[in-house]
Length: 213
Image (cartoon, rainbow, N blue to C red; front, side):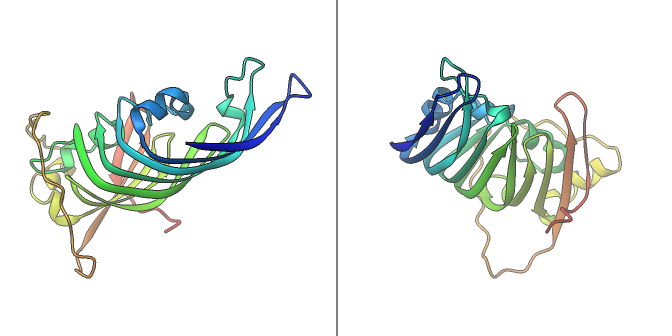
């Protein structure tokens, strides 16, 4: 980890730190624990595992004891996660009825690369493509349980369509290990656009496309 920046503590009620941080090959469990999970509800060390390379900048409001006030800060991150796993990650687990014979409780992926912004306590996720054990996915949205996910239609054929008509899917063994599914970039395939909105106690999954895309 390499860190530089500007710290202004001249006003005890307006203490700010403007970091210029570069992280290379760091264990995500340790980083997210030290930074208190960046104040997010879903992006926590229990959910996301892997090796992180990133550049982090912004303006972070801090308490006098130097604990960050994420809800009143602005953070910009260029991140790359290699050999990652999403374990019991709510937005993905919520889609378990739409996937056929896939383990949504432990999703592995090769690379996650994106630019993310956190402002006023909310993280915005621009569109990103992920090769994972669930198959090829395109994800965008914001951390307040407002996600758009595009998946190849073939992944939810059969059982997934039954869910759309109110029928249930049999549970998949949460310890099942799936292989990462790689799709040829030049291969044409139909996609289904899903929209997840709400919170962990009250959410809705419907067919919908991100209007910004």
